[in-house]
Image (tube, rainbow, N blue to C red; front, side, top):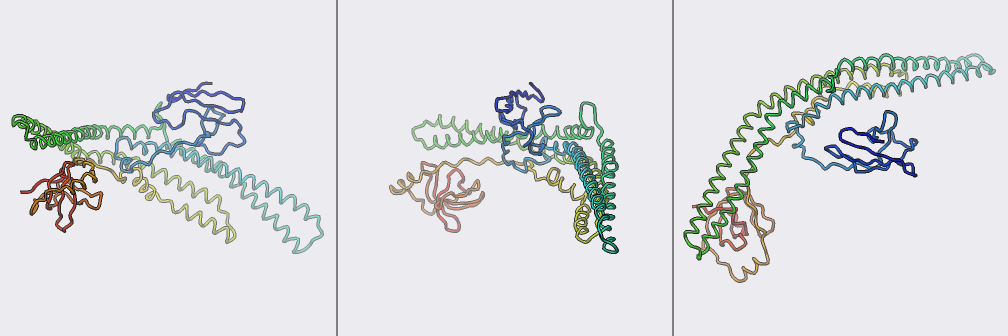
Amino acid sequence: MRKSACCMHITFCRSPTCCIIINVACLPIKALFPSSFCIPTSRATLPYNTNSYLLLSETDTFPIMASLPKEPAQDAKKQSFWMPGNYVRTVHRTEQSFQACNDIVACFMERAKVEKQYAQQLSQWSSKWKTIVDSRPLYGSLMRAWQCFFTSTERLSALHSSISQSLMTEEGTRVKTWQKEIFPKKLFCGFRESHDNNTSFSRAQKPWSKKTMKLEKARVAYHKSCQREQTALDKEKQANGNTEMSPEKKQKITEAREKITEEKEKSRDRYEKMLEDVTSYTPRYMEEMEAIFELSQEEERKRISFLKQTFLSIHRHLDITNNESVKVVYSELHNTLMSISEQDDLKWWKNNHGPGMPTDWPKIEEWVPPVKKLNRKKRDQKRKEGQPVMIGGVKVRALYDYVGEEGDELSFKAGEVFLKVEEEDDQGWCRGVLDGGKEGFYPANYVEVTE
């Protein structure tokens, strides 16, 4: 047998051990299953979990025995409502609400069967023992007391039978009718609300997505130019320290470095202009997205409100409390139902899947030069041989933040001024003293000499 859906081709055959092997020949964009599964055909041990079933036909379902791989934890900010495409969770909420209505109806139809069976059992018990009691040699108040059990049971049986009938005919029909009215479908496009929301969100997000893509390209170009400038600076520094190189060659190296620096500044200007463009467009983007989101929220609020009233109506059918212990049970259920709040539910959705989610808004990301790994054995050997010490030291200003990885390294913030007491070694490290008196090593390319 061969079945194809959503670019997935499924082939399965029966083995002598009564198993079905499913080979996935072509997976969808996001593969969720391994290449093969071994699934027993026995239905006696199937777990009641629709999420673990692979639908093979309208009548046959089989549980997937292999566990699905867990997806790695993702950055909450990257999952923000504002990021491209993440509005789909709100779009899919309509289908989820529709499915929730189906589940509610199925759930309480099953409860109606339980009530009907319980009513029948009560009636059978009462009829059996009432006949037996009538034949027993009891009389007076004791007989009336005993017979009162059967009378109350008959009344209770009738009550549970009426509960079963009302759950099936009243609540089930009510939800189905409302569901049909509130979830109109669009030809070949699923639910009309989902289609309209998806179209509106996509249209509102498209310009902003294009701008952010251009911004990302500008950021990458700027960082690459920073890297090229750093390489040119290192080359120029080496050339200036080489006494054997001719002045003409040094001049060419300097001119090349200046040209690269000029290109870097131009790329930064483009980066800043793109950021300014994105930043200036963001308020409009937020306004349009929130307007569409609020329309979706209003439809969801109506659904929550209707289902709340449905739950309360079902509760009124089921609440038959007559003694204190049962009253406590139904009182707690009633309090839980009464605690349903449209505003709290909508607020939770907004903070977890809507505009209230944390977001990484675009901003300038400054380039920080890499730190060359310090060879401590080589440095200690140099210190034994003797390292020239600068008398009085030279003032330097930190260009970037640096956190020392070892106890003999300095930590400082960008803009901090301190003394350099030893010249840069061949590993690119200097020795300095902070204002507080702490002495240690730091990467030479993280500072500049102050005038």
